Length: 247
Image (cartoon, rainbow, N blue to C red; front, top):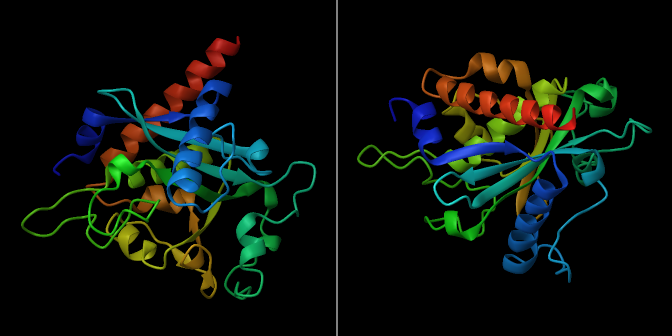
């Protein structure tokens, strides 16, 4: 717990999913979690869970460096280049509950926003109390207690990976439709999550929230800052390797 960055890189690595092969891993994990296990989406014969938003999304994976198994994935949905005002998924789901006096996504520069979505962690890494049906990996027990503290490396690693990807691609603000307790969990890291609307029913009670990417990085507490530094470097390295391979 004294250096979360060293602890993370001992076990895990964030991998930007930039190649067709890595994106297939993303779609396979999503199918395993959302279709086969939790039945949130229909089962597909090809074992891939995809939708219309994947074509204009940034994807990342988290890999166990000891056995090479991908433990989870997440994506950042970008607005459509050809139709920037086309709503992000949360804008449809929360159309009636977004408080536009707090934040109106339609008034933001549309090329500077994105939505965190489809964060999934395989069942092997969701064995603690309260995590089985929580695909995002956060629960009331994920940080342990005073006697047995622990850190939820996988969900935090995926979120920080998405933030690093966002900043690399010029995205300033990210939205997320998530469990109302996310703000409490992220508050432990020094991250401010602003709720921008009322609750909706979407695989349980969810609220629309927003985060400012630069403020997140600037506000990370002393424990979490080394973790973000490690993850941002891994994202940079992954992008660099991909660009070098293209050339």
